[in-house]
Image 1: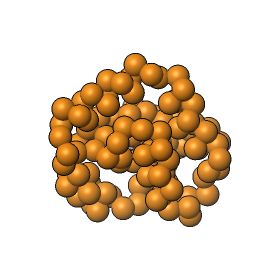
Image 2: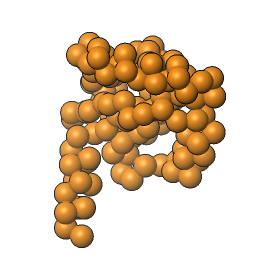
Image 3: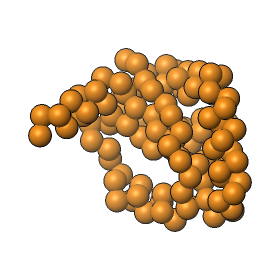
Image 4: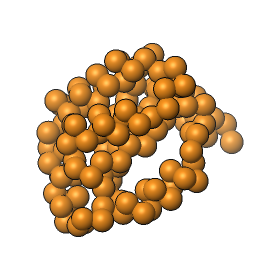
Length: 113
């Protein structure tokens, strides 16, 4: 399996919590949204630890994808750190980790409709 990770934006804690409550089990376990109060690698790794392991993802590979993102996207990370700082204390930065194969199937199904 291969995975992808990206930072999507900044949200209020309440909005993110509400979204997670409304969508507790993503379709086929293909993607998960991670929230972190700090735009740090440690923050996202801790958030990933909260994911349900029943998805049978290859955890080491998925975590490695997050680490590799952190090593290769310094400008993007700095941008989101600044945005999070501007948003204030009641906010967190949102990232998405996804199984590439399942994400591809979901996106292809959009073209078919």
